[in-house]
Length: 286
Image 1 (cartoon, rainbow, N blue to C red):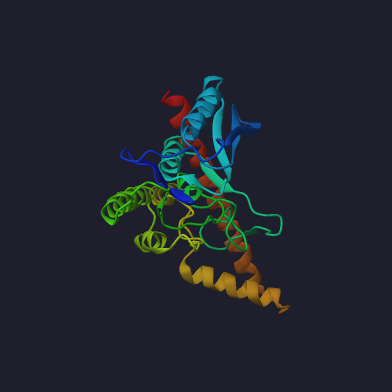
Image 2 (cartoon, helix red, strand yellow; image 1 turned 90 degrees about the horizontal axis):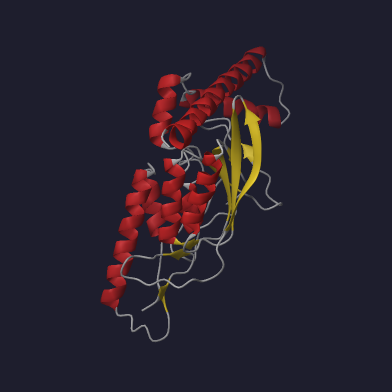
């Protein structure tokens, strides 16, 4: 019996999921040398189908076998199989990759003043939706704003799908997604929004999930402290004043320079720690 899920596609042990299309293209997009290491950046393009997690694992293993370290993966995908998306996210997390997602040409990403200065957010959701958004969550650091919604069932003719069967499969699906979101340290309120957003809508958490919270604590204990909420508010107010043509005082100019330098130093430290974690996960432990 086949149960088809639109966008979010749940494939549990009790459900036989159809192959709805071709597997995604998973490729090494670029390699560059830094220090004594060659870093590989990967791309993931297309719907998430059965076998894509294994393919990603093989690509990373091949890079590791020749001494390269996979550092980033960029997604362009409208979604696919939920279980496959979760498995991809778990592989990404185990290898400590940095995740990104592409934006349409009409949307120009901009730097975000919240959190770490290396984040980029667009004017809307990027081209990573549903199951892709789950995979994106596997990153230690996550660039972009993917779109989420809950899973749902679209039964094929002849499936004889009763309410009891639907209830069982949907409940199991949402429980599995919740457990994964918790592992990726997604805030409780954001989990609630994701699981309450119907398939006809898209939920964009914006800047609430741009970094795994455990990694954030690791950064906090090894790098300069983040700016306080009051400092972010002042920085934002100065930016609004400057953008509207107002003349900045010396104190305001000095504060902006200090904020920018502190964020640059913090991001540089975070970047170093992220790469150390990638080497440990991909080379040291293999």
